[in-house]
Length: 292
Image 1 (cartoon, rainbow, N blue to C red):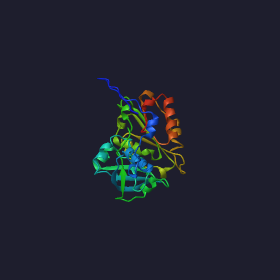
Image 2: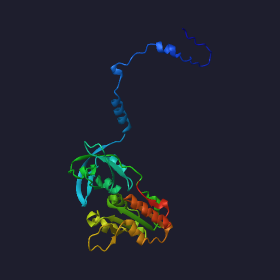
Image 3: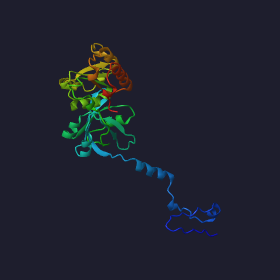
Image 4: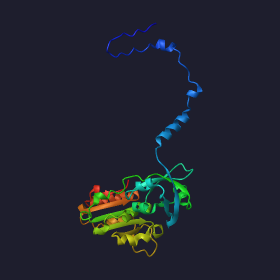
């Protein structure tokens, strides 16, 4: 059988498809082993193509106890200018992974961007959880090498509650290791000394579990009133007790909702309940900042 293709000048033409009866009789070369790739290899190649994350080896500078189950971890990034340059805003985070450990950890950067620029260090507040990558990280020694991604995320968009004269009240809420990016915010400077009412409600189980107590005095000097809130305080504690959201509900003192901003980092329930209280008091949702 001969298939004749009509000639039509100056017009593109495609031949009609061959009938299935002919196609079945046409010989097709079979795939030899070198033409075949195992399905598993295809999956591996796909994974390689999809993982475009850039990991930078960086040595541990120091690991120190910050509080019960919490550790200050400092990583040397002085030889990685791209890492340093990626940290531009308080509230950003990155991924950290260890050799021979498949699952990385997401960690908020506790130090302000200026620290990396001046000393070449990223600092983190890490909670050691049994069986986790964080536990292995907290067990490393000076000089051990980890791998970091560049800083990511939009951080705390402090521009939404600037200038200070328009937003004289800033209420900050943190629980546990959620104080980590809050430290970065406070030590980066956001005009706290130019605002009339800046409060940090910081919750922990007890004082043994409360990190950064050695920094409170400096934070107060910068214009931030620190209000520790203990959920299970020891005998003799005279400060705020219970949960952060309850302590704030008792105090409130929002005199100008339109001139109030908030920053929240910590447990989801706390964040949701505090946000609800603020909105009920007339604070705009747009002025409640989170880093995720």
